[in-house]
Length: 319
Image 1: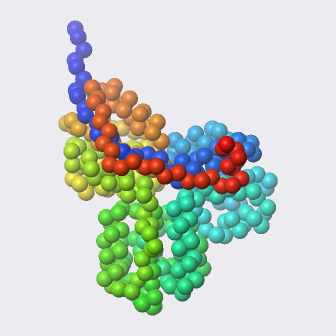
Image 2: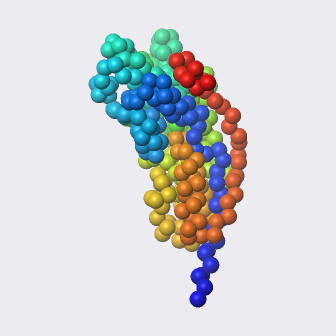
Image 3: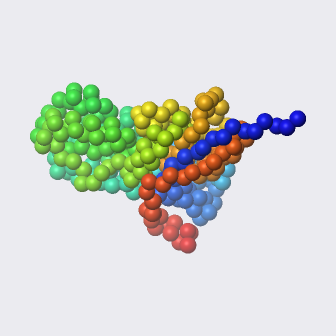
């Protein structure tokens, strides 16, 4: 008796996908800090939103905490890629802690814009998700009362600012490009004098990964997005696929895959959020190959060549 042949499954794998330059830099900062100072190195908040990455760094000697109070005296601490309020490095300096800031440079750019706008006397409308670390960090760059959070078009419609002719807006870097465009259009309609950012705040990696999903979603019966449920950019990729009419699921690892979701699927789209390493994509392909005869096709929409410099104190360690 011969084994039945495996059903065929065509995989359309989005490119670009996975790690962005900011995530690469943040992980490298933690690894080099462990190499330079020795374990343990403390990290305030998850360095990036991915359990596999966090667990891997923990195995190398990183200790993850939520607040600076949990960091003992005399050990180095790293601030996550999402950015922190100004009060955090100030507090670290007061305690004499050695710290490394792994904030993504594109998030830092938003921080500096916020400072300049407030210095110029403008009130900032910030488009983002409440309680996300990046939003908390950005709000913490300016004195209280200088920034108002908007999450939806409805929020933008309800705004009643004290000085509607003296506004500016900024955005979280990991938002839905389409949703944000609708909110921005509402702000421009209601407040024609509102000042826009000097450049697009939604980062290149977020935009590119959403464009890549749009490119393949219509040709797929379903899509899988590898990423964490607390990863804003990963959750947005699921939403993008679903808006294209393609059922989509977010999974953290191949082990989370429910094969029932693939019932009747002949063409499956695969992508990964900006904090998910490529090894998890390969793990998923291997898992799918256990049940299917897999044919892989990478669909590239753009090629990313951006890289960010490391903090000065670690450049020598990386050499």
